[in-house]
Image (cartoon, rainbow, N blue to C red; front, side, top):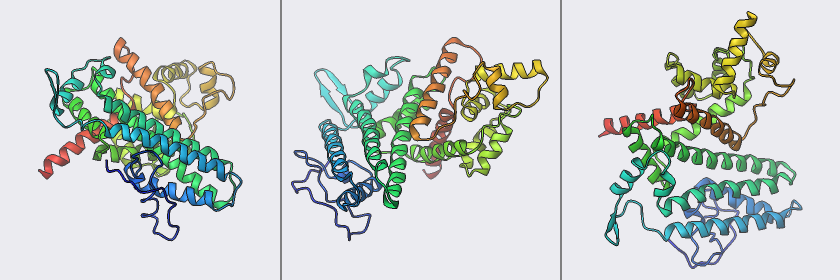
Length: 368
């Protein structure tokens, strides 16, 4: 990662958005340029936040400057730590042990169900920490901008929300790749593809599958939040139509439509749609049969599951909410896989990302 001896400077407000913030150097000894730490769109966002803080149009300027400086310094330190380690694709020797990209791939794929954390290179651990730190950085900026007023603040808040979501979705993709490696139900071929993408992410590169996964997931989650949770026959038909109507990425819905006959994939999709575990949905279906009902609404679902009125978990927005929902569904899926009980053994997100991985490989093969 290149280093600069230049002194920190404010972005030129007359410069094109794509060039603003490029020359700013984070005030850390030997620090990298912002463009080495953040994506181009994130660099532009930081430049506009600095200009907003400098404009004097709000009473939180000092607070915003402090959040920017503290957060960028922390990210710069993590970035410098990353550059202090050699590339994970280089070969080097430690004592009698030779390490290479091939040996790393072998170690990751053969690390076992519960041993991944102990075979991760230090650079990978720091890269994962950097991803989480980026989420927290943009969240801290959002807290300050939320206290400001005016149309400019509202626009910046929307952009900060998008930045948080992008960082969260990337972290979710990384976790899914890791879960492929440790899963007993994943083929060795998919494990190897996932390991390659993990190494690329730790090296600061994002593959085609990840780039496609994040927008597909964002579209599906946003549509899911806009579409009312009708329940109906609990077959998901109404919700699928609503997702399509709400401009959901059709790649998400069509994938599960093509696999409607696969019970576990359909069940994973239903968990995503209704935000209820398979076991709860089965309980509702059983009660529907006992009561002779063919259609139910939220009130009946609450009663069947023993919830108080209005206590059915609401569908909430934001990238972090998606991550919490994913983790909750993933824990239950892992339990079913380990115990061999009915229900989906993977999440809807996992099915989608694996399909994208295999499609990317197929496209590479065709191009070759």
